[in-house]
Amino acid sequence: MKLLRCLILLMFVLSASAVARKNSMSGGWSPIKNIDDPHVKEIADYAVTEYAKQSGHKLKLEKVLKGETQAVAGVNYRLTLAATDGSSSKNYEAIVWEKVWQHFRNLTSFTPVRA
Image 1 (cartoon, rainbow, N blue to C red):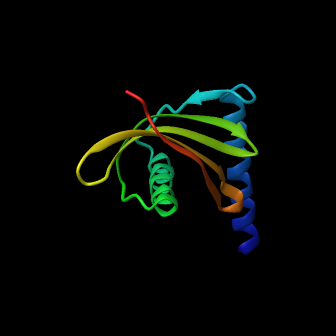
Image 2: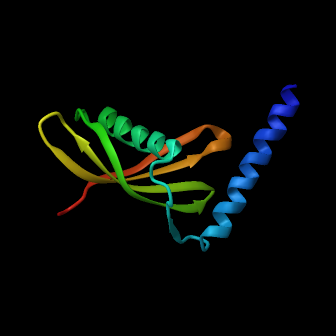
């Protein structure tokens, strides 16, 4: 049973990787077609939470405005998102590197978007 779950997970990862490679040129960024996808929101929540831990700023995700992915050793997500500190809302660009098969995520950058 455990082996079967591992095989299913491996098939999922390989399929996702093949789709990512097919949809983007090597090293190029491809638009995320559905920014309302729960996984995209999960990545955005991770970015805001991780930034808050590292910086001490109290931010809360409001919404994902747009996003792109890049196939690397895993997937880079470049998201433009709106977050609030309780008094005002600002837009930020966050880049998160994810390797699903290793349960790995890393916040690469989190910067305010200049208006």
